[in-house]
Length: 576
Image (cartoon, rainbow, N blue to C red; front, side, top):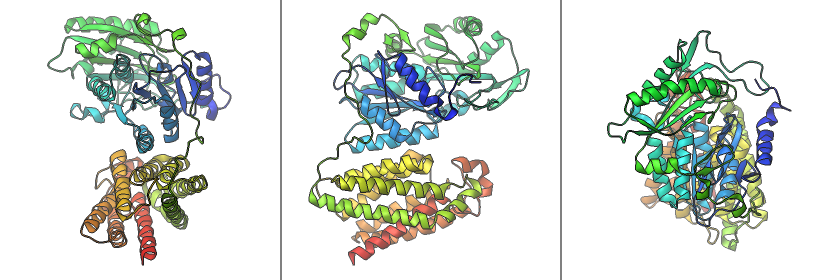
């Protein structure tokens, strides 16, 4: 349990501020996380690594030369918001683009993805690496669909070293994915962790047993087995990981034996003694092995084993020097000393964004976009109760409220942008950020990304025409499909948005105007949304109650159809 705190809601934020104060030679606290407190070479790609708090030294502890340039940090076990990720990335980026690295969890995928959309809309090249090392969370054939646990450290260490050695964005991305695909982890838990302010752990493992396949967000193992000796636990972990060793390998491996918070160093060394024996028996050489706490889960009693099957390139970067608050290795003479690093003096703060100069025509277009946002807010307010009722059947019942909060946030941000002379593109980017921040959750991240992606099709210099409007809507749907990862039939917004986009594109390519195309596409979306009543939910929280969802339309698909119908009616009335 946590003994020292002022208030549970403020725990992670206060911890981050204290961490930054204690390590000011390395990091500076900014909105949403930390970034390096010293200048980085102009044009160097920025490695932005993050996730929820509660995992120290991940992720803030890994910011420094040879590794991360910044770390957005959410609340305990919660993804940082899109605005937090954006803030950290904006502060870390220095002309070379951004690589965003995080464990493959739904919230992180959405919020890092939404931040990436905003940065791309501003002209920043962003690449995304989702670490997926946990063999207990999916099959070998679906390695990149697994979740990320302690493999975060070697993947980010190798990527950071490649950047330090001069890799550009393309090369750093290639090496990061290569490291991820060579990394496997497996863990066990003996008891659960306790959130700050809570009296009881999130789960208990029955006495005399251990949970196999633990998660790092308080998830219990996938099965319980009798408690073993240190050597038996080592054998279990080693055999689980080595089963996925590639047929062609160098025989050299990076090794990480990671304590989750309550298993102490001496215990880990006892386990590693047996791991070293098993490595030797298998003809494997451990390269710069690490034993300790690297990716924790508050006070969880457990440990995990990570192996990276190295080749010459990966080994070079794994062995390279690194100098961060919580992770140091190698001859630091290979890296500039603190005295040789110029301190940063300027940092981005949310709300201080410069509004690009816009033409009179684009400002007029922005006014039209703002009217659409206000229309969306009216529609969501009108249907709030209905959408909440649909969501309560197999979800948590907050979809109506979330849509109202999101549209209101977008409207307020749009009004502010208009008063500052924003063009159509900039207004949509600001509105998208506000929607995601105000609504939170999955729908907030998806709609925020949709607005931001739509903005890429517009301009701050010319008035949007019908072709730009169609492109904006297609961009929005594509962002929802890509970031959410849903497929047709999963019973999500995609089941209405996908058919809508297909029909809109078909109608417009056939020579119909925007109004006619929207009307036809909105009708298709409405029918598709109604048809989701016959589907069983396969994604999100609703998948747990999938059978219960049959007979009720998906709330996300329904709200999408309602908004597109209102948009079609609006455009039709204006163009008549």
